[in-house]
Image (cartoon, rainbow, N blue to C red; front, side):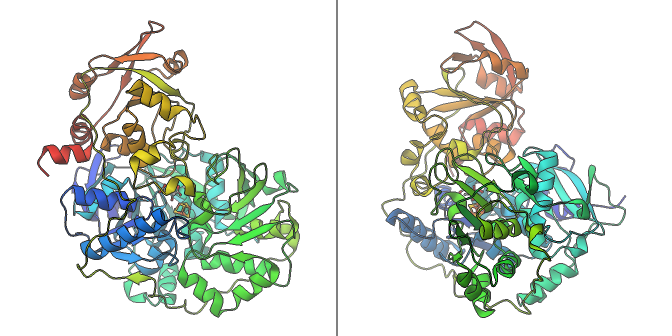
Length: 639
Ligand code: MIC
Ligand code: SF4
């Protein structure tokens, strides 16, 4: 039996374990990507582990989220990142150079290599035949020091594409269709590997959209072969020499298969609240929207920008609408300027931002309270746009462009023939946004750079109140919100902890402090979404020592373990119903149970009811958790 491309990539990098679905494996990392929201912590942790030089051949730090530097604390973070990168051996990508994933695929992607990033959308580079995975800052810091990345060998699912997209239907609709079918937890523990006769018709930019937003399915990653489409893309970037073919064997074995006929897909929209609340655009057509946006790492490509321009050329954005485009990179923006797209967009009444994540993470362009925002972005978790009770719809760049013209959600098929979009012969060259390392200079720690906290060893027994009782699909945006007011504190744990669960229950930090120790209980898929490690560190700082849930999302579970918080799973899902907020729970013999790999008994001392929970750990995870997290373990070992 032949091998899938995913298996080939994993086997070529395997350093520990057996690649059997469900078992823990360790792989070597060729490239690392850091952002200005999570990368600061990675570098602080790298320093705290006593490391002095990055080991992977390519490590790149991106100042991409907080590009506007609203506050000197953002610039503090950037200065720390820039000086640490220079000193320890990472390339620094300056503010304005673009969103990490877009810039990385353009500048550094190499088919066949592995990439680990501090950001959950790192899988975008899977569009170019890489194995690209998002992880918490500490796991990334370990990889920067040359250590392997450990994760559970995923099930490999072949997504077999046939047919071709019809006019006005885009790659965004493909991934929204998968979200509609499978939900935000449909990809847990899986890799989607795309193949089939429909593949050749998808440009690299379209593959990027699909690979990127696979993060919303909670996939470990998505993988596309490296073929002629990849070669043509890299050649346009002047990087044809980095191309190499990557493909599955013809008789490759897969754990499962999904069939997708591209010609059956129609324009789709995700309703406010979650990227999987997907309906046909016709169902919401006519809904008034005050704000429309195209960009983010999902829709910031040249192809997205050019498609929108082709719709807007010679037309006018509805006066009631604020329409903002975020090109994904400096290179795309330069090419837009060279090819005349900027002039056309400005003439139509659109605003073009500098390349940044910006409003995708609630930084700038925050919608007015009670208004609706339509976005060709990837996430619409409640409050993420920067205002409580927001109403953010997700769509393709074509639905966005058509809607910007009318001021209401509009099916682009009502505009007649879809205009052609040309790819430029060559993208503008762009090296001005990078600073190369030279192992020189001092690392500058401005006043916003605080120390890295340390977890504490797991106690023999925990008796603590339930600080919060939550439902299903709690995202890391719920736990530690996005938005400029919060993101400014990513390198200041005491300060950012005060925002924990801000939009869910603003009293939580005070309650936690009063209790000293606490437990959180929740339903399924706890911790989905962003890889932000602060969603584990801040609760740890507030005294949370266990989360009991029906299930956990991969990156967040790893982050909890890395910070000494026990991720316990209800053995009987129904037990959650019998728990109320403030109930005192007693986890008798927790430590001994974790050591023995036994069930952890829980007694609710208010009701007298008891139930059991499980925490299935690998030996490596057990050692880390018991020590109080990876840094605590490193210190114990004298690191
Ligand atoms: C996001 O899209 O949620 C972010 C902001 O890029 C995060 C990273 C972070 O929270 O710092 C992510 O995707 O991991
Ligand atoms: Fe940036 Fe948004 Fe992409 Fe996150 S999802 S990396 S905030 S553009």
